[in-house]
Length: 227
Image (tube, rainbow, N blue to C red):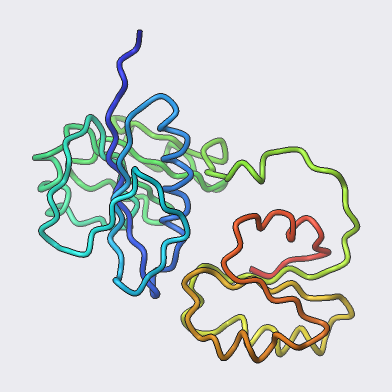
């Protein structure tokens, strides 16, 4: 019987960074835990509300947080500082990082995950283990299951988990006067300006959603999407 590996996954959530890193680490953790032992450690602001609570999630508000031992550490922070990975290497022999844009491999890192469609293994050193391209895009199960065809009769609007500069409000002002379709506007769990939500709530052309778990149902009815 194959031995279970121990994974530690490190990521960040904040009103500035948003929820994207956390979301894909949740997906990765759920996939890995089927055959392995996984701990997801989230650096978060105290005001942040995490949209999923699981036994394997640990919230870290302190800089001196003690890291658990593991066979592999996966980092989704966009941190490329060698000093950071040198310290991690004292805990973990294998360190894998997510990289979407830099094509940089800090010293002490042993693997790269870059799921973007424009990526190629050739962008990284040949001695680095690479999980590259669209095969490794992390999607929730709701997006991979087959579904019935539905009538497309709306516009889908979502600009992420926190939208700190209120792009949704700006786009709703434009869209509400430019399209004949109903607008489904999704605000993420980290969106804090409730005045904006109240502003659009009574508009008959606009349906407001906040912190929903099954977004694919709304997306499937969209004629087009703005994201």
